[in-house]
Length: 365
Image (cartoon, rainbow, N blue to C red):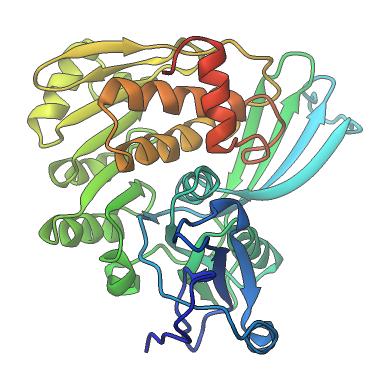
């Protein structure tokens, strides 16, 4: 049951209390009702009653979700080396660290840092990596009540080896033993609470069920295709926007040009198709127009997660009701800034940092 705990105007709750929930998410609010998104905090339930007692003048109001991200959540281990290891060799890493990863999860973190109210639907194991995934998302202000923790299962894990001199990377991925999301796993109350549903294609059965239900409720759906997967093509019929990497196009139809593939994708249902091309920017297709958007030159430290960050930033632009050209330019800027620091999430910028970056390059007004 959702509950209002007062009649004041200073604190807002993002996530309502539930029996299995761990956190409530709060932000300070001005007397005029403006939310300070920089103050999002994850507060453990056991500490919350103490806060209420100490600050009795504060109000606690349930907040709606802007975006629900559905899909893959993982843990990344990153090692930076002088050069890639040869067979039967040993190398000492120049630097190493770990943090949460996964397409849907990293997009959710991006949205939260930009100021959106976001929730995640996914599945992890009850190992140390799974705990890190949940804690990392909660600390970023992402509502985690849609995350299922499977007992006795291991979480998805990625080993990222990056060559420090070139910035090139290799990724070794283990899906873990956690079961794929199923339609029965979906928290429909949470799914229907957002204005936009962003999904990756790594859980096609649950994804298909989710997009169908979202469309029935009039919720806009954005698909991150990732690599081409034949079992995920059915998703295309039920989404509004498709964002695909350049290599998806050649795998989808090797004998066709990019333009013809995008025409086919549009004919299958989406209103917008975006093809990302890394540092070169990308191309957008709609039934009425085709145009390119720019990439940005930055000092690249690590490109891990850049596409996932682009997807989250794109959805943020849709939330703001910006036109398509403005939205993809913004998303390209956010993704470029992410690449200036090691790790898939470390460099994800705030809204203000992104706008400053774009204005310095005369790309924002």
